[in-house]
Amino acid sequence: MKKLIKTIILAVVCLMLIIFTFDFISDVFGGSGTEVDISVPDGATGGQVAQLLKEEGAVEHPTFFKIYSTLTGSNTKYRSGDFAVNTGDSYAKILKIMTGNPNSGKNTVKITIPEGFEVERIADAFDKAGVTPREEFLAAASTDEYDFEFLKDIKNKSQRKYVLEGYLFPDTYTFSKNTPAKTVVETMLKEFEQVMSKYPTDNIDQTVILASIIEREALGDSDRHKVSSVFHNRLNRSDYLSRLQSCATVQYILGERKAVLSEADTQIESPYNTYIHPGLPAGPIANPGEAAIEAALNPAETEYLYFGLNKNGEHAFSKTYEEHLRLTR
Image 1: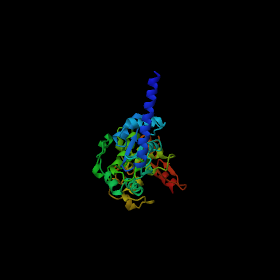
Image 2: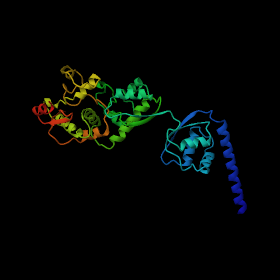
Image 3: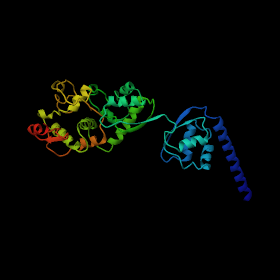
Image 4: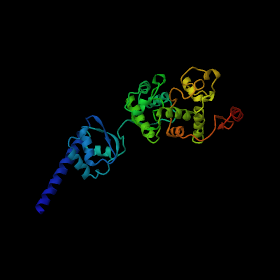
């Protein structure tokens, strides 16, 4: 038995020497390979990480790598996330990268897309950050050729400025520079899908259209649900008040956030103009956040039909036009 133990110890020592010698040579003479991306899922074992590295060509002998990571105490320190390693890197360097911060070694950009940004403003933000060119993003947002069930329910697509307006969920994202535009769009659509899974609705498209208007009209949490109630109350009417008369929809047509609209502005012929067309506009006018989506589905219970800014810069809500004029002058 003692002889067997000595043999096992000797074998382990020899294996360690072979691995450390191999790694030393790689560290000195390596680095001439190519960069590959490794995505490590949550809870990945050392063996799984070694296999991922093998599949991407970063290591040739995954068993050696697993043993090396175990002997160096790195086997329980792997971080989940995306990492960039070089196929010429030593085991030591690979472990240093993969037990550090995700995206280590990657030329990445962390960017926040605010609630209420239109497609064109999102395109400008990604272009400025070097994520993806503006025109490529606009083209990617003009097609529904993505594998998401909710996109099949979008109506009157030909009337919309951008088919995916409203569905590019505003959030903080991390992308590599020069990411393909369709990859960026698909990531934002996945985030939208995840958020909407919490809010059952019979008509996602109508919900998103209304939420986009609420996002652009409301002043924040204090009045978001009341703004929603005004629009719901108007949508439930059959007279001239079924027109939402949202300034934000006209601003979308104009392509600028004009502080005061002229009479001519409100009479522009467009399927987005809620001053002249009853009901919802042809499509969303911005990309709403979760709070606006929730408010669209859960309006406050009121009889309000009007709202506007008062002298204090707050929204004043009213049931009649006379009251509206008195409160907003």
